[in-house]
Length: 320
Image (cartoon, rainbow, N blue to C red):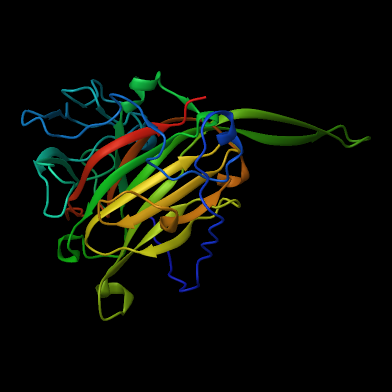
């Protein structure tokens, strides 16, 4: 699992004011608030269907470790969720009753939990499972940043007693985006000329939630924090403290290629005050947004991860 030492430095939350514009003006906005603009029809999942199911098709994939895909991949009956070919899927994916304090009127949510991660049958090495949200089919598989897309999801953070009692990341909300990365090389012993080129790569920025267990931190109480991936230099950094209960998380993608990260306690709409930061991830401009996915991680030592519950993931955009 990822694990960060906590430095209680003050995070800079320099809010310059959200810009809520329409049409071509939105391209020049520093950031937009996730959940504003126009909702992409049929891009979400509210889990209200009592027959909602996920077919695991075990054993799960672990291509990132042993180059094994183990098809057919798992997927939900409604076509909105799929196993990751790279890292498999959580061991439990099911519809559950929405915990108290959720969205008004919500009766169903989705729970994800893992016992053994990584290569099926192996133990002792921390890793993660992935679950991919297939809402991108509603917008043709990709959204350009010129439309200032954003995503919002509600996440129920479980009581600390339900977490694996060791310090490390347990949950992730990530985006799959395309960016053009520049590279340079030198050639010719005499003239030392350099050439530069660029290629489009898929990057995975987003949020992690790290548990800091009193069993190994030396602190009197358990705690948890957001870890943001990533800043302009490609460094992950510690974000706000996380407490049990419902949270609303969001990411927005502005026309200048930057990503903004938002988090708020509760299930209300995000506001400018909820912005954690805005960055060119790894110092490059994002071009397109594919979708979002979730990570469930643990130490792979026969201990269940925390039971993570989410509700109503949605995509939004500004019409050109």
